[in-house]
Image (cartoon, rainbow, N blue to C red; front, side, top):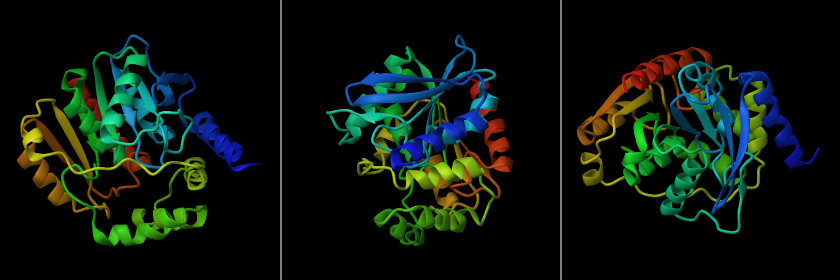
Length: 284
């Protein structure tokens, strides 16, 4: 099989084996291309939009779709320009403002005037920026081990990631994930897809500075921050302290034993993520 067909086969395998049977895929037109969304849960339930980390694809949220889909219409989104089934259009996503405009169009396509919004890692950075951009559209915000929101990366993490970023392939991806997760047993079908994603033709991800302190201090959307206790990406204690200092309505919890890349899908940690997210969303 070619790279494209092998990636699609791995993607479809995760949906078939890990996602709930009633999951519905859809392709939404936006000014930046077509966006794939995998949805599960009652169609008349409150919406919950999930944004994955870089390279992970929307399929990484299978444990949350099954659990939170009992009370919400869960929409897991493939980021345009990242590995997944979204297709970039002629208008590229080049800036953070493009990302928020793209997500505006996605929510419009879902008819989600107001939604709970959740992101992991890079997806959390996008989610926070979007909530700062359009707070009236976000009912509740969940940030799962967010990167570049409240603190920077550990230099050691970036050094470890560098070979995979410069010359991505399946071997480097597996080795990197094994190092960061301490050898945790990740779902085999998803791990295969994650390795296929290393060969996926994608644009350089849009990045930017951390949100300004002034903007965060004026942010009024109820926010849950879930941190990986053993994250090698950043210092979770520093992230928690900065979030507490800057966000007036933030609740921060640390998940013991979790690493950045075991979240949100690894069995023991996923159950705790689901429990805390469900309680937070129910409170709204």
